Image (cartoon, rainbow, N blue to C red; front, side, top):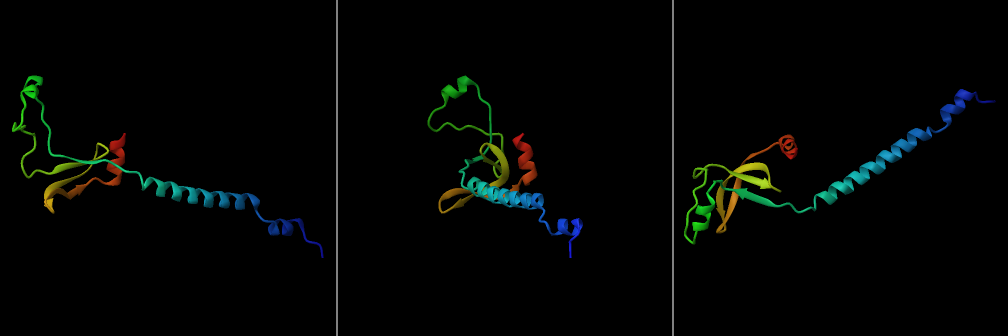
Length: 117
């Protein structure tokens, strides 16, 4: 019994579709490895207590024991920066005789991406 051309086509594997599926699987594997690689990149985290502007003359007069007044009030949230980009705000705490930050407000991932532009 001879098969019709249509029946033969139905039995023939769709090589293009199989190739696309294989490429997609490879891409996902590469993406996962790239993401894992990115997770090991060190980032600089800093906390900004406040800012101020001073004259060069005042800067030259600074000495040990000088006090620089900042623009933030005591108890006001501090800014947490990652690679000099704002990602969160928090309050200063003491942990085992060291300063720490309790995060009180974290920017959403979308806000963080917008700040990169």
